[in-house]
Length: 502
Image (cartoon, rainbow, N blue to C red; front, side, top):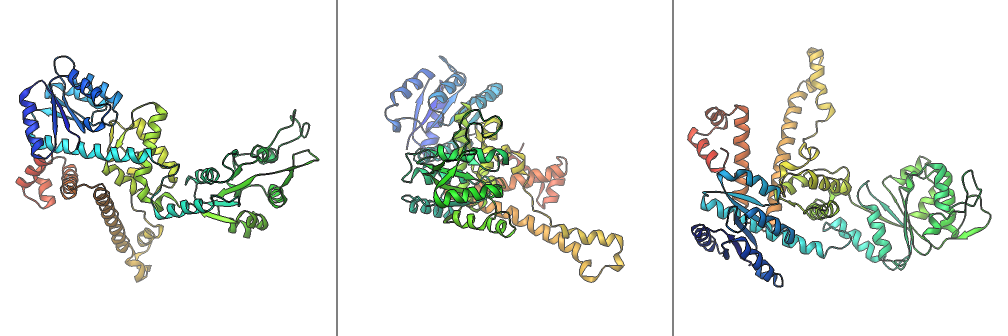
């Protein structure tokens, strides 16, 4: 394991931290000023194992401040957790440390066990980030460990040597174009162009020209001959997104191209040969559209040679952590900033969200977090309002009975008379399942990450939430909060101190 680097001009601080960390089997290396650290980092550039796992630095030192050191380290090693030690009078500097990307600050004089616990958390975070970076570096063009996504990957593999027409179905934002690009990339046509068109985004009057091109003078404004998407995709793949919204008369023209491989430009008299593989996608139920007369049955069967169903993100919750880290990296790169990390608690909260906008919504959330989250480590409280506002839904009929009761309680049948308490019980049961399910997801996430402090960590958070909620309901009156919780006055005082709720 790589060592913990300690930077402080005070020998006693270095000695105490060294001994405490060695008792925890955490190797250390100590420095007295920032120049020594920067020189050691340069020397360790060729041997990654000689670099630090975590760096703990004082703010005020001769020869350069800890904040200057933080800036230089983050420029070269953005993923390295840095803990800044500061006196209570340096809290303004601590704020600057957070803004500069510090993992956490450690106020002096510090409680040694708490300091070791903080460093241990930083080590865990560092190791998770290393694993995430390795996975990111080796990540394919598509991410997904969920069984449903593995089925999609297997299908792409089976189709890799085929030119067959494929229909991709799935909800909006689930990544249908990404699958189409993967099908093209792994096909015999990979050297040809990939041309995509959203048939729902182009007005009906222009769509025909967009697809098939037009001859000069075909209509007002057609000053020159224009090649359409079919010709632009010659030798490659044409991706027709939202095919279910294609106008009915254009469906007939598309069917002809798929049938004999020829088409006419708008206003043209000479047929054009189309050497194109067609991949179509839709979020609609095409079978139902056929029954309603909105989609040609013969075109449906022509497109539906091979169908790939792309799962919604809520069906592949185990992929949320990897996708989140991937999108955070992408957003940081686009904005030219340091990538932010995300805590296990925040990931567990994200996992309970339904993502009606699917992967696209998760990508937007990560972009929002990159801009809006106040610190480098994203906590659950930093998530956007739509994620934090998860609540059990109340069925419309659950409130119908109480309203009827107010109007005419005597006329209400016996079955309806119990609807109100039954609804309340159902709502309470749903709420119980919601938080218990969240607890289970959080535990699973922490266990999967290899944490060995799951019991203590979750117990602390559970007790903290209970006490803070009780104190909020009593406006900070501890004795009354203790009575409501059913615990003693001394117990709540001790817990507030232990949990750092002062």
